[in-house]
Image (cartoon, rainbow, N blue to C red):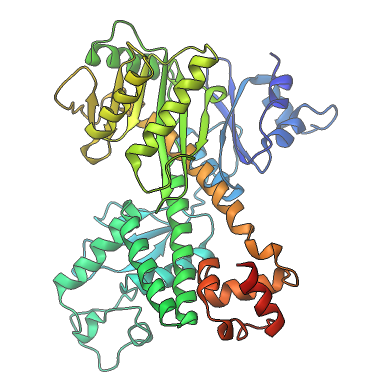
Length: 479
């Protein structure tokens, strides 16, 4: 298929496109709000007049793409890939332009939290990058309400006469005032690091319980503020996990070596040609989804990516969700008489592996080796080996499995984010006569959620701007 015809089949979605010359060398990386429309530009007759672009297109042999949930994530991914591969025809972003990071100085007795654009090997921890600094500053303000970590550069060993504003508004524990000891402060810092490193569910759950408590006391304004904080933290969760989840592009010759290594370590009869990986994504059971990504010869095979909305399992149960997605995926493969994978990878530990083997047994699918990758210590649990395997972090085989796991994680989160945005944009209030977009926003801002509106007394509904007695009655009747 010619490049022009292939470009017409690119998705009408945001993402990053990678142009390679013969031999596999990356010569240009770009981002687009719509990959299909952007690539069409390169093949439109008479469109390209620049000698640089003409030279570029004369050398392009293949074009690949990576999907992202938004143009912002595409911007970040483009930046990372350009800095990693230094393509010849990328002029911008090869300089010292840098995106902001969150820095927590864990190497200090009382760590500070602030924004930086420079990463140093100084013992501190860095989180990011983030696409814009202004939203990041606003996010820090909200994060500091949950994790009141100092941002000042002052010497905390010298007690000041007057506390700063951040201490007075409860956004700092006040180590400079002697209000917190080192151990308690360190505990808050460790919780913050766990939050950004993947331990978000506990924080979200605690804030949700606090919001419910205020709602039961009819303190709706406080409940709404916590709701907004939860939404912001969820945005941070999605953005940081999406950023961290993009798989690095394999170098030439690396994939063959990785496949050979997996064959030898796992004792497979042949080098696995098709490897598929499954992941499940949800936040507190909300909009639970599953995703299956497929790699052929060690490279992404996007035509065989599949995503699933969890339909049967209604509770928070990762094992049950895994079984549902795996069962539906293999039933589809069997019915379509498609090629089954040579190796199946599951994101999880021994329990996830056993559940996957149970599903394949029920479907009478035999001779497919199954591998589970546990995030803690990156242990491998293999269906044909009793003890877990621990490969060195320099292992190319482990790197390939990690790339599969991370790509499945990214693909699942992209679908989860899409469904969640669609859900937030719709509301049962849309069907209430007399309730337009502005009144709907006023109700949701005041109460925090549809469930809180449903539970609210009739008199409280009339407290909302624009809601009179008649409309309050219509809302209660409809909900």
